[in-house]
Length: 263
Image 1: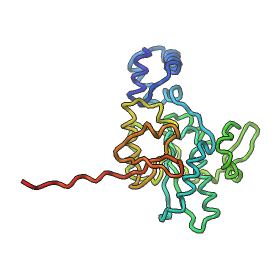
Image 2: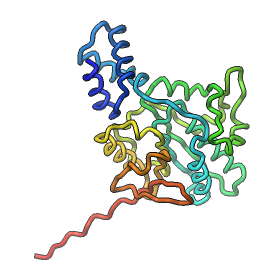
Image 3: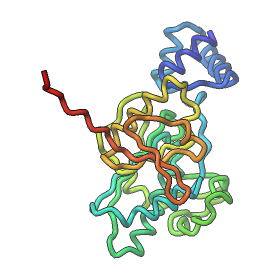
Image 4: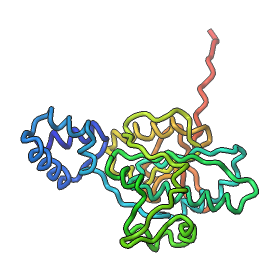
């Protein structure tokens, strides 16, 4: 039944799962339900139980700081009073909170502050629960990203085993569960962060994921992917760009060719 579980993981989540994770999930299904058949396996995926076994949730504050430098530099270019941002495959929420901290710091010093809203989602229900709680171990503060750690001071309370997010930072963030294989809202976001998750998707699923993300971006919106992932991403509506050694994509929908009515 491991082959059935692997195929269901690719069909439902679009991901290529590690054999050890598949085996852990197989044992879980058999122990909880006493049966291993296609119907039970499908049930575990639909309920969301499978995601906690098959997804990777490595995250910390201001991971890959070049992207936050990029964000910091473009915030002043927005003419709109409101900016919509998405943290896709957000894991336990450190990325979304890092984005919020940076914008709060920008607003504190800017003559043209921005109202912002962040949608942050993951397929794993358990990590979304952690994000909503906003309580973390000390591992969320690492050398990578330390140049931005001063931005955490107003919003992180030191507790016995780590840190707790100040409730004031949560007001503009919406955490929810969502499967990247399913469509998102159409042309909503100015910026989408989708980092260090693309590598886990099968080749077949990558096209669907990029199409869903592209459709959710406003025209000229930015898609920011993990440093090591950009070269492997290709989509007709996403133009690869490089600014100050930061690689990203910008949505530029190709113009449809004019009809030729010549007989």
